Image (cartoon, rainbow, N blue to C red; front, top):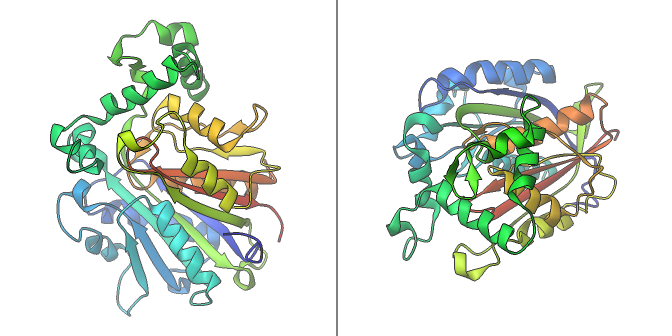
Length: 335
């Protein structure tokens, strides 16, 4: 979505935590809300709409997001919604809510406790329930299949993957990383984002509520999905990411990109799909807190704009196996 909506909604606050005490998220979310609202110079009662992203299968119980509402304080009544996926998609819902004139401000949050179980096996629940999920392939082995396809087709090499990891961690070198053992060939430990707990929150505001605050204006958002079945798509391409970027108005002029790439080879696939030239700087991706990592990438891109380090930034979020679902958000300085 772009064009006539350009500049009408802005990110004015962001906060994140890499700690999660319980699967309900309440203890983690309260300080994250306070930090995000403080940076937005808003009070809790100033928020018109709350929208979250989390997962019942990660928390291990039905309607788990309801517990998190305790962190908001639901009396007096609030306007609230939830998506069963990364909170980047909750931000899209809140963005539409503001554009529709049904809210002037929104706080979007995501949370997850990925260390509560064996995440690599839990993520098998995202797979085709008829032919793949019953085999319970772990997420790292599934990622390794995609990486192997990319190497065999000449898109990149193991050295290229190590270079991505070295760029994420300045204390390491490509040669050192290549000496490490495989987790699932051709992936090594540094190729897989660390499983993490965490939460994040982003505050949105309509143009008439931004005032003199720091702001990163959303000029476009798009999200698309590729087929779920592994045999129904080319795993070395990410057409849904390309289409999402086009829906967001394109990435011309982008100076920095915050990509949600749980595996190093996926950062290379995404840069290719999005057509990002080498001069577009990357905001390093470290750990992968489930269901808030994508929202945090939007927050990180917004921080690049609000701090003045970039005039135009692109954020990307993914969900599902092997970059199946992709969202692209373009943020700009000025109104």
